[in-house]
Amino acid sequence: MCGKIRSGVMVNKTYDLLVLGSGPAGEKGAAQAAYFGKNVALIEKEDVLGGAAANTGTLPSKTLRESALYLSGFRQRDLFGLSFQFKEKVSASDFMYRERLVVQSERSRISDNVKAHNIDLYRGFAEFSDDHTVLVTPKNGTPVTLNSDVFLIATGSHPFQPPIFPFYDSRVY
Image (cartoon, rainbow, N blue to C red; front, side, top):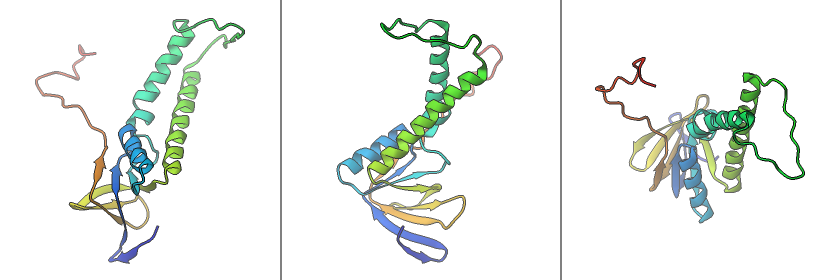
């Protein structure tokens, strides 16, 4: 990284696109812009790339579900010339091991995609200082300021839960 330090904050370069969040939308948006020759930076506040979809939500839950369906025989198909042998007993830790393998594979794929497109990666909490400037504060280290005219804010969301509905009632599943 290049830049000057002004009053404890490193002033870095200007990008064509700054992307906040490395989930599916952030990763794909950053890679697509870089593919078309844009100078792109990706900012992620978590220790791992991929957002909730890759780390705690969609991918882990679907991996566990598909593993259960496969082992139950629901998704089993005969493949000519191939035979499979399963353990006599499968434990929850076996399921979690497979889930961890799939999640780690996706994290690696995302990291490789970021590197392949020469996207600058910044880790830390991002906040706008003005219309064109983002201050990135890492957990450890010197904060950096990044500038751009174009931003992709892909930080995920939380569903709105109107108070009229008892979402946490024991009768709600």
